[in-house]
Structures are given as structure tokens and as C-alpha cells.
Length: 453
Image: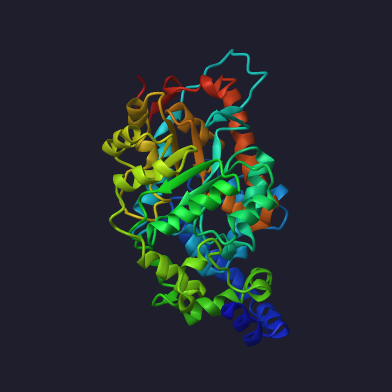
């Protein structure tokens, strides 16, 4: 509340508008430079995969960066729209990885290591991505991953993502560090397959209360993140801050060059709060940065399989572990009696230089057999990525950044568009691959680069 009052008193609406207009040219330059740098660091170079179609940089190729999400042809268009709209510090939070960003880069490149071997002369006139997730029908094998601080990207971002998931008929996982309460999300998207992601911090009474609330609002499943008890070293994000408490002067000034974002978010609503856990935070630590730092400081490095057992005992609905990247941990998770496992590097934001979830997927599938649901999270930007993951053994993919690009670009409509794009691409690719149903996908349709079995 103090942050909200500060913003409204300290910043005059008219002066911000005039300043933003005066710096509009600078905003475009900064956004363009940020897109190029960030694209390179994440392994997504705009011209890298189109050089064969160009001669001396012609024809010129640009992503759509306007305001109509229906004109976005691919996730990369929604990403470009996001880069134009968001200030630098928010972009670094959205796009950044840990240290050299090698783990994040590997998430994308792992998909390039697998090539399709399409079948022809197959009747694919009736194709469907419909599947079951945790025993219930879903329109496609996809789950919206838990992501925190969505209120920085778009006001009430969590509610809007839930609405997009409801529209697409897929599950939505809400983060402990989300900015809308779980009750508000349930009211905003009645009927959505609402899952709750849990961070363990503070005493046991905190996670126990969060479980009680999640059960009361009808959350279908619980997801425990296992690889974030020690905060990853996200250098590019930290370069926009002075210490842990506030933005640098340059980052704060640069945010004023994005008038739409500034007016719609901090000016109109103040900085978001961590609404689901703020009552557990000391009153003198409840500002945006202070609350985030307090939670990090109180996440126990002692999280263990004993904790998993305690949570399993209290939560009687489906229970999923997210953050597994080691075969031994896959075996241990199966033995612990969880209902699902998400292979995940936390978007490349925790330990750098890890393998990608896709690297481990075929081995993990052999370990779990059919007893436990197996998912992967990280790097999915295309419908073909979804098909590759399912062919290698995933029951579904979890997508984080892709719907966030849509959210940043155009709110709920943009998030809906992101899911539509992935679904349309996957359905089209199924036909070209020669399969009609998700169950028809398998490793026999793939070859590793340079190898044909």
C-alpha cells in the first residue's frame, strides 16, 4: 500500500505522459537493442534460420510488433510485441537466465538435435491433439507453467492466464509468488483446471495453510518446486537494481519511456504485492522488493525427501514434483508416491550449465514406465517442440515464457493467441508427420541429428 501511495503522489500523470512522448524515439531504440541482445543470448537469432531464403539481407524480414494479437503468426511475433512494450527491467526478468545463460540456451537447442522422419500416404484427415492430463480430458498435451511476478508484466496477469487456460481447455498452474490471490483467480476463471505451485518457506504452518486454502478453492493438483531453495544467479536482472531494494536510476528512467506499460501498471495500480503470502511477511517487510527478499531469505536449504513425505501425507489430491533433472531423483520421486514429475531447469534461471529437460526425457520415461505422469518444462516455442517432447515420452509439455509473451503483448487475448498458435502449429505438423492422434507419437518418428537408426 505504501508503494502505491508513493507512486501516485510522486508521479504526475501529465508530466509522465509528456516525458514519455519526448522519449518515444529512445524507447524504440532501447527496445530494438534489447531484442537483438536478448535474442542472441537466448539462442534465438532472427536471421539465423532464414539465411538460405535471403540474399544480401533481402527480402527484409521483420516480426509483427503492433497491437493486434491476431496478427501474430508465431510465438516470435508475440515476443517481439513484448519487447516493444516492456521496460528493460521487466524484460530481463522475463527473458533472463542464470550467469552465462547456458542452461537456458540448451533448452532451445535440445529440440534442434531431433529431426522428424515423416510418414507419407497416411490418412490424416481427422487429426486431434485431445488427450488426458491426470485422468481428465484436455484439448492438447499442454499445461501453463507457474510463473511469479506476472503483475509486473501485466496487471492481474495471473487471472488473465487462467482465463486463457480455460479458453484453451488446459490446466493452469498458479505460483506461490503470483500477484493475484488464488481465490481471485478461481473467481475470474470459474471452471479452469486450477493447480497450485508451492514454494516452501518459513515454518511448516505456512505451507500447511497454503494447502488448506488451495483445497478450499478447488485446486485440482499441487506442484512442489524442488530446485529453487537457493536463488539462481541472474546477473542481467541484478544489473538493473541497486542492491536488493530498488531499481537503478537508469532502469527506473528507462521504464518511463514505455508509457502504455507505465500508465496501465505502476501508475494506475502501484507495484504488485505477493498477495497469497503477504500476511506471513513481517509488516515492515511488505513492500515489493522487501517481501521478495524476505521470502528468499526464509526458504530452507534443508528441503528434502522428508518434506515431500510430509506434504504427501497432508495433500490427498494429485501431487507433482517440479525441478527434477537427475535419473536418481526420477527414481526417488517414483518411489515417494507422487503422481507426476516435471523435468525442469526452472527456465534456465537456477543452476547454469545443466542438461535440458529434453536431454533427460527418454531416460526418465524408461524409469517411470506408465506408473507416473511425466512432463517437461522449458524451451517450448513451437508446436513441433510439443510433438517432439510427446514423441520422446512426455505426457504433456509445460509452457511458461510462450504464454507470457502473449500476456505482455495483449493481456488475455495475447495469452489465448499464444496457445492457439502452438495448437495450430502442432495440429498442422501432425498431418505433415503422418499421425492423427497424440498416442501415435513415438521415438520411431524421430532421429537425432546426423543419425538414422
